[in-house]
Image (cartoon, rainbow, N blue to C red):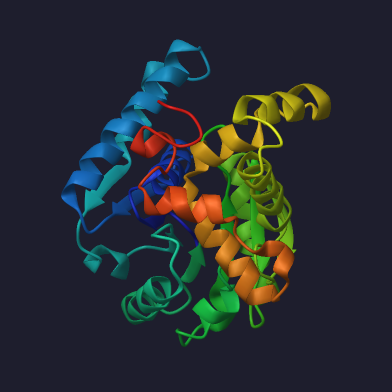
Length: 282
């Protein structure tokens, strides 16, 4: 199937970024979210992001306008009956995604691939909610999507080699570098990243160091571009907690147990940048 029209579900930070890179690469993009306010924020965020690329000389105004012209927005899924490829970037919750994949399976034409931007949830589990498991795979972009070149391609139990090849080629069209990961909790990126973030939070809780001290050690000592606690705030502490819970449940190893301080901060609504307060104030 020739892919010209792409449907992206979820107008959060990741969905907006995914929609932007597809539109910039020449695809017609339908961005869907149940909330019109989220779509309005998404449109504004994409416009702001593209404007920065123009300011920095990475693209010209004509390319920006062309990308914006390829975007459409909807609170309905009806338009997904016409798309050639789907990327789901909804909230990181298993049953929400399974229900969505079952709906998409009914809407999408035969042969259309259904992919998920999930950062930790089993692709095999999502595929089992459809009648096309061979066409379901993980397409995990990194945040911020327009800047980060890595895409984890996650092969589910039934994912076909042809589907993986299609997604790999698509990454090339987007200017991204695909890396294949097996369908285990957290895949590659978050299986390694989240225990580091979790350990940093334990270190704060136990008084080993302040957030500033821990982040400085990791930046200057390990040459990380940002410290793990700054990164956790950027990702969202609620998202970090959700991923750690998937790791803990799926692998059954106590080393993945979410830090009690992380649970407490999420319960308090201190989610990082998006709430204005996490390990740092914003």
